[in-house]
Length: 260
Image 1 (tube, rainbow, N blue to C red):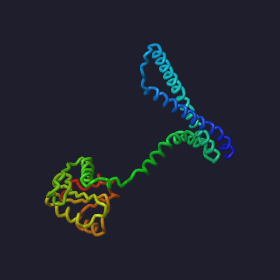
Image 2: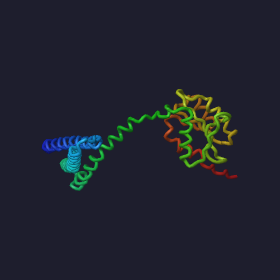
Image 3: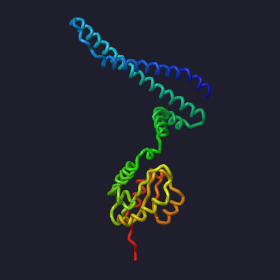
């Protein structure tokens, strides 16, 4: 096994070096072609000299385009060879490690696909790790309410945004009677206390709502969680924001009629 790896190391290095060189050439050719296309042409008072310059420029552009068209398929061919080598080496390695011939052939056929998908997978993983999950902290209070309302609308439910004044502690009303949900949004830099739960629980009957919810970009104090559990108020903190849509759907489902 080690001998096979050592034997394949030199061809693999040559192939990789060839790919890097050809990519650099292709990039420089592309940049030169773009630069030449963007270069403004200055009229020459001598007509003959201007015609010669224009024809030479057109010829250079054509040569550069042909060179780029010739190099691009070569890079694809080298890449295909790399995938083929990876498949062969993987299949041989699997067979030497004791795998059955059928499984070795299957592994060798799957290896090129895995190698081809690996760069995109790594790029997506790195991009995902670099994405911040505290995006809601950058919103203002009004923007945070609009964000929650958009999620509620995406659930296919009617949404009512209450007025800024006289809302009885309810910012958003979701659903239809008699299963309407009263939501209060709290965008702040500290944990939400019991005041928000008291406001939305007291204001829900005034807005003809039977269920309550408080949504925040932060977390809730222990006292707030205890009070919300006592009154049946749903709390959605920063960690529960990705599940906000499903939570709204669950709370606005029609309640089954009680049997006498």
